[in-house]
Image (tube, rainbow, N blue to C red):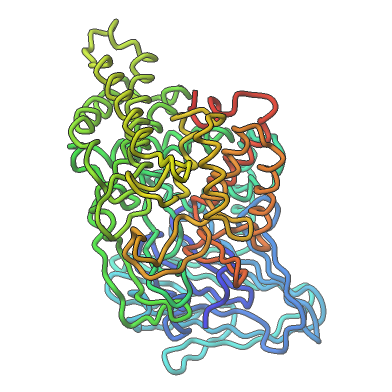
Length: 607
């Protein structure tokens, strides 16, 4: 059985990511891209679906781990009765091939070790052809190839490669596993120690660019490093998570593929990157966004792959039993075909953020996105949609969706005012946009607010609550001190909070919108939204308490999944989750500057 979700750490090279558990097993690796087929899929099945184990063969009496300095180099120290050993796991950014390095280092005494390599391409289903190379192996199936280098003799049995060896104090030995295309020659092994030095320098240089000086700086940097690992460097896209089908409810069906890039992440990504000084990453993300949505705005999707491609056909992998029996295991994501009005607001808010920050976006590119998008939104904003949570039930008039349509008009107006398009001879119907913005605002306040329960509601005419309503003040729809906002925050806190953490919405009864069985964890980003609202309301100490509870959910190496189950005290959902780490950075900045600046304007574009 796979480890607890929170018992995993990650390594990565900004092309792909691997998950390593506390026992020394790499249980998940997609190569050569983060959204490619997995060659290690034990995370969603059994060791026979692929893994790479490296650990002491004798009884382990203690385990500790950490990331070296401010890097993505993972050091796991194992204590045994005969000595202490360290395993250093990392991938090298900018290496010619995505390569996992594993260095074994004797710290004291004498430790017997074993390694077990099981490669199964195509998500644990295909046994490769294996060929000995003298210092390791090549493993090939279809278009996928791996070059394994071992400093010790190997033996094969039952489609598994094994080795046993002993390491004494002061010894250091390096293994490597490099990805390559089978039309290429297998790469020569890189020196593990030299690669370790280069990787440490690369991460130190990257971290040195961080301009964040507020509280919790070390935790903010850890979240930023995690976000960098979730970035596909060739395009600048940031994926939602490194995994697919880690469940939102153990044993349930809420298992989705998050190895894609959501437009919904646009505003939060730019906010986090710009607040911490990562302008190059912000520019790259902004360029990816413009490329991905190019074309007819009516064809704009809610998500794309890391190249900006659109076809994300959902398939169920019936040979994998799923994490702790949570099935089906899915690759692809059918939600890419959904209609979600909020993405227009997210895209325009991100565009406004880029304009405010002075990112080098040519005027014609800004208007080429802005004008057709607004023309399309004129036609569709009154329609029902599937909403922010990608429900697989009937479309509804979701309050959050309408508010984000309001955001689209509001930001479009602000962009035009900043660019002074009139003096450039560009005809923009800004007066009509202002009228539509006011119409949406009036409609939401009339139909999205339920006076009987004294709260904004999930969708027009309902009495259901939704954590997305916490966004209303963050985006500037109403001031945080408006009585309706204060009442909504109180209602969400009363009805959706479980042991100090906020659930997305009520699930599992006949009035639930998502059409799925009951049960999921509390949603981390929703709880961050609560903290942000409390800051905007001037309730900083309460916000700080919420933030510290969230901070306490980080695992031992500072990583967070999508959700948390207060009953089992476990992390749930795909891992690590970009939304959770983006929100951590933004909320930390929000709290740090709460007493010194107009947080709503500086952080959230709320004026």
